[in-house]
Amino acid sequence: MIVGPTGSGKTRLADELASSAKEHGARILWGRGWDGGGAPAYWPWSQALRDAGQTLDPPEPADAEARFRFFETVTESLRAEAARQPLLIVFDDLQAADDDSIVLLEFFATELPEMSALVLALGRPETARLDELGRHATRTLEL
Image 1 (cartoon, rainbow, N blue to C red):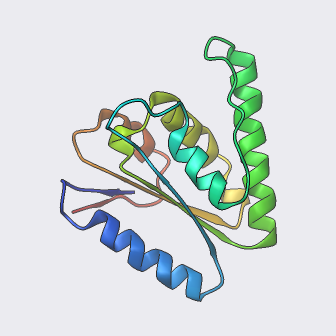
Image 2 (cartoon, rainbow, N blue to C red; image 1 turned 90 degrees about the horizontal axis):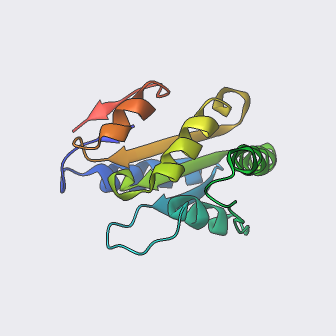
């Protein structure tokens, strides 16, 4: 995780890490939160998976079992991608992501040790949900 205020260089640092990872053979997937309003649920995930040539089919919000199966489907899809080529998945502006995207990231983080993948989560310090994500982080860098 990289946490810092607006303009502190979070995205710039992620760009540099992504460039280095790409030079070393990793595939880079990017997703960003959108705080302008109107973004659909799982928007950062939709963007990242679009970079992998996939689309999302999210469940109805009230169906908890379908949501769990959806989380498993996304995880298995990325596991398959990581088996073909190591992945760096960058989620920028998580302070603007919807709650469901953060919950999916928490779910996905529990499966990361078994994959050839690294997630880089970026957000502002005032985001309460980043504290929850921090318990899954290998490292948290505060700028």
